[in-house]
Length: 417
Image (tube, rainbow, N blue to C red; front, side):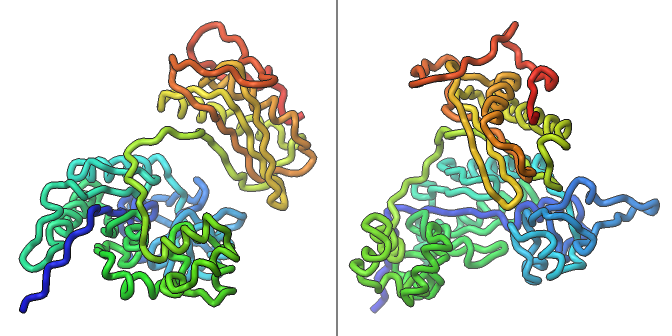
């Protein structure tokens, strides 16, 4: 007697993750590096130089000095132990002969738009999760719920392959896709067969494909929770699923313990959200060397002005104004300080942002050297929206002669003094 065909779940959710995205974009530009360990994270000075014969000379990781971090790395570099967020000096010890390239975020954003547009032509219900990953609701895509031969998942498998092929045609890049009944499992599944993978997991597959994995594979279990679970001898997702909820409550509290239990059993009802308004928009930069507020005042003022101009450009391009202006400072020793204030009216021009950010800056002790500087705009609104007046003391935005964006004048805004 034939086995009954298992029913498809109510939802079919995909998670698409581009493979080593930044590094893969760089390989399109420098195809001669394919198959080599390549690390992205250098400075502009590490741009490859063209030789008289037309070949390129690349910088090696062994030649790097500074305290930058790895933005991403190719899979051959990862095989040598070099991963994102690792210090470049540490990476140089593991892979001194790896090629070092500067990051080009304009190019990465361009390819991000290309791959997302290619996906939406096939499956329009997409949740943007960043520059290199998205969730896709395949539930109602025509053909997704149709069997192909004896494969009940043949229809959705074919659509996932079509998406992968479309992304590659549009960008020249590969991606990995996980398809499951929900976002939590799809995020895990997309990582199981990288690069260029396609993994389908249904609820009946949990014992064999999900439960043997380490608990840290669940998106939402961070280092601290992972360490606490390890101390309780809970190492795998299966062991977490078998743990009594009462024990989890004792160590993690009511809410988080309930989520841990549900996550281990592959339960997640979150919808694919196609649009959400940002809470804030920010720009920040980490310096190549620590800067002092007095001795390096001209350079800091230049960087501060540039950040405010970039932030104003972001607001204008995305069609937002903001009423809360904030700064972020990271000092030597990694001490981080933030300050913000709320204006009477929302703004989006660079002069107003820099004026308000400068007032925030005056509330900070700048005797220590700085390693990072950032500016953010919150309480966002669209032009024409009626904003409630802020409670308490607010700072009015500076008057402007017209409505055009104004370039701030550093000599009129005394900073870092």
